[in-house]
Length: 206
Ligand SMILES: Nc1ncnc2c1ncn2[C@@H]1O[C@H](COP(=O)(O)OP(=O)(O)OP(=O)(O)O)[C@@H](O)[C@H]1O
Ligand SMILES: [Mg+2]
Image 1 (tube, rainbow, N blue to C red):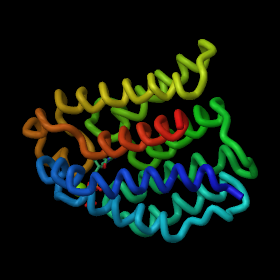
Image 2: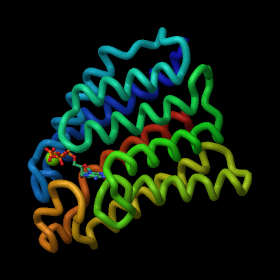
Image 3: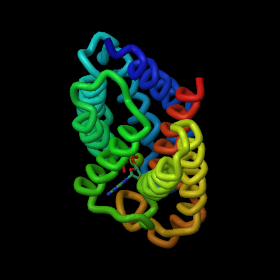
């Protein structure tokens, strides 16, 4: 039984679906107005296809990744799909996720995104929220904080990452076609990544 992680994923899906128009509007400004639509379609499929009866949390994350990979499309489908599938490997066979496990999952997810998308921090992508979030989370955990406190720090860093994306030009993905004209707009992928972390934080805090 993997009820808790399934419930958390369902909350992530609901949040993404709730923010479908917001994410799509952000992508309209610097992309092709499909990020929210893409992600909402993917998470609707996740809610329907992934079950709380999966054998372990690794299986839940793996199925989530595979579902996102096959339903989201665009640039973000393969990237988010890979992120969840790489995180799945870290917790394969486990029934619970510790604070340390979450750090390793986020690390693996980011490594997967970078392997697939060949982007670094500072290119106006989801990585501008995810990498600072991992750094902040790791700092807090290594200083002895609990998961909720570390996730608070991660969310703060992820939101600062969104603000940072407003100040830079995109050099990866569709927004890079705009060059300097992408400055002033926040990145849709950094926004969906931050929403995801905020749901996880709120879920952990209960
Ligand atoms: N190489 C990359 N590495 C990391 N994130 C990326 C990369 N390319 C794009 N992204 C993220 O994907 C988001 C856009 O996702 P979206 O679902 O709109 O796909 P898309 O760019 O429209 O795809 P396509 O151009 O294939 O239609 C961006 O806001 C950015 O955060
Ligand atoms: Mg798009």
